[in-house]
Amino acid sequence: MDGQRAHQIVSSFLLPCFPATALAIMQSQDTYRLKLQQLTASLEAWSGFVADVARVEAGAAGNGWRLALTPLAAGACPIEIVLDGSEPLCDVRVGALIVEDWQLPSLDVVLPLVEAIVDGRVVVRKLSSAMTGMSVASTTHVALGDGSSIVLPPEAAAEGPSSDSFECRDVYFLPYRRETGRG
Image 1: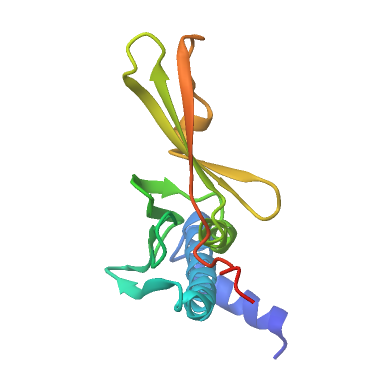
Image 2: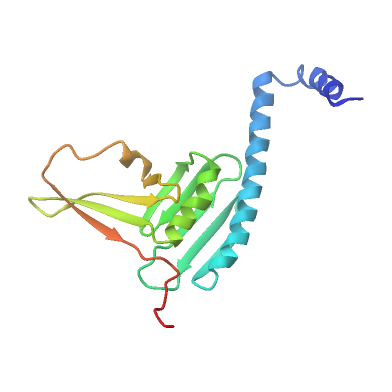
């Protein structure tokens, strides 16, 4: 029996039991789980390369998977990401910023995001009132290796202050791995 005939038989059996939308959702969830397994395997392998410059915690967390990197060097940005096991959501902590239930644009962004943070390509932009000095907003910008960037929290990318009476202060982070300058 060829693959097409087998598909027809399975479809004729399943379609009365499951509407087409339910089958599409199941296939989508299966695809997500497979991509998540591939991603977590890649992250676990990759995390071995930073074990000498960061405390690494990686593994299952509830119905998902968690990676936490705490840099050993001062001035570098810690990251923790907890990936949901059933849909492209995650909780992420970058430095002091915590974003819960972040809708990932794609699982493909996770490894480049972590790599960029480890490489020190993180800027926290703090806005304060020019009149009072009071903090108004804070956004975290991560520059990915392909030239694009991620702004957290995500809603901050669309919003912004409506007045010119703000001062902006950028806080930069250092890479986890640094040249010692000794030869």
